[in-house]
Image 1 (cartoon, one colour):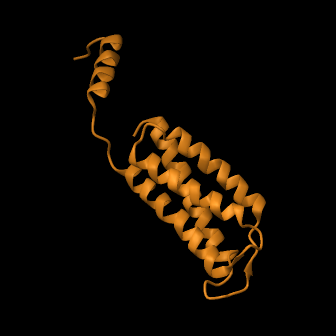
Image 2 (cartoon, one colour):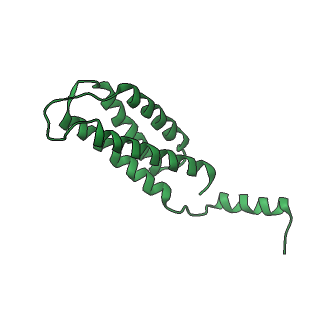
Length: 133
């Protein structure tokens, strides 16, 4: 895993854990019809991190699409916070964020196939260092 892919992976893991923590501790009970009062400052910070992660993963195909979906749903959640949702809808929004984040993590964790570009980059590195036997 290269450094950029690794950074996107660990940021996605951080975001997934953070949204899970919000769901477990701040979103109220899923069966409640009471208003859900999430901390919008925390959600805005996570949204910025999610956008940055999505932008860094621009070349990663399926991971980018999953991060884009998570960012979209985070925006929908933010548009209705605080107090615009009941706990059940809040949990649905959080699930809609968590699912694509989990998909992105799975895609990023999978070993990437060496592309022809990667082969030529590796060859160029070996040539620059000199052939060692």
